[in-house]
Length: 68
Image 1 (spheres, helix red, strand yellow):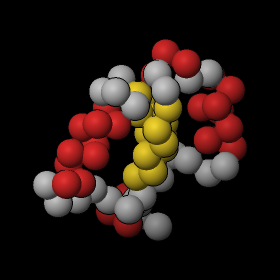
Image 2 (cartoon, rainbow, N blue to C red):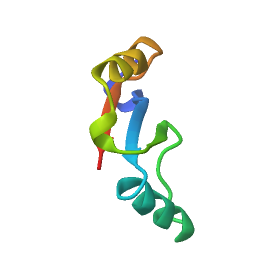
Image 3 (cartoon, one colour):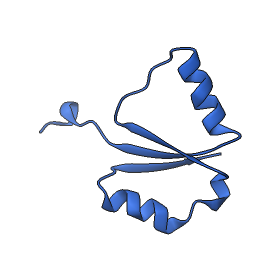
Image 4 (cartoon, rainbow, N blue to C red):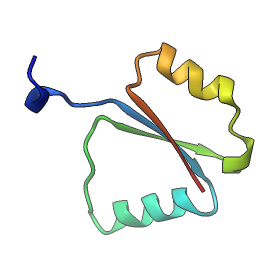
């Protein structure tokens, strides 16, 4: 597989009040993002534990983002 064919699977932990609200607004405006981006709503980005991020990698994620 070449670099051009690589489509990374990203898990994004989004704070309910900040980043998730922005992602929801983007959806309402019909702004699309790749289907390989998986958004997980969390109560607060500060509560995302390192174990949860490592679990995402164990399940096949290529990258993890914590957005608040």
